[in-house]
Length: 134
Image (cartoon, rainbow, N blue to C red; front, side, top):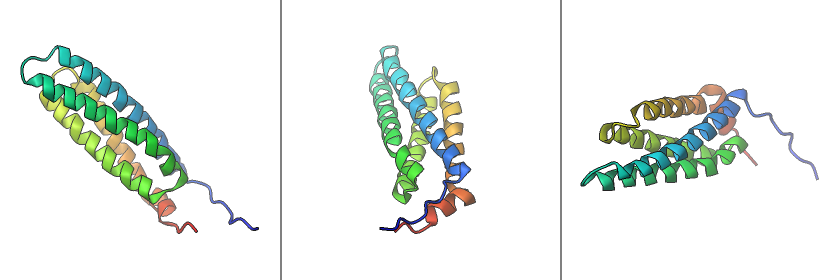
C-alpha cells in the first residue's frame, strides 16, 4: 500500500489556525462576560444582552470545533470558519451598539477575526485548500 506524499501545511495556514483558536477562546470568554453583564441591564435590554452572550459563546465553541479541520486542509471547515467568524463579527458589532461595557474587547476581537479571515483566504493558504485531496 503506497501512501501519497504529505505536503507541508503553509505557514499562513498555521497562523490562521492559531488566530482562529485565539479568537474562538476569546469569544467564549467575551460571551460569558456579556452573558453575566445581563444582571446590570435593565428592562428589555436583559433579553438582548442574554441572547448576544449566548450567541457569542455558541459560535465561539463551534469555531473551536472546526479549527482542527482547517488545520487539516478541509475546504468545508474553511468555509464554516469564514461563516462563523463573520457571524461573530456581526454579533460583536451588535454588542458594541447595545452595551457600553465591552466596546474595547469587542473591537479588538473583531480586528483579530478579520485578520484571521484575511490570512485564511490569502494566496498561499488558498492554494493549500484548493488542492485536490484524494
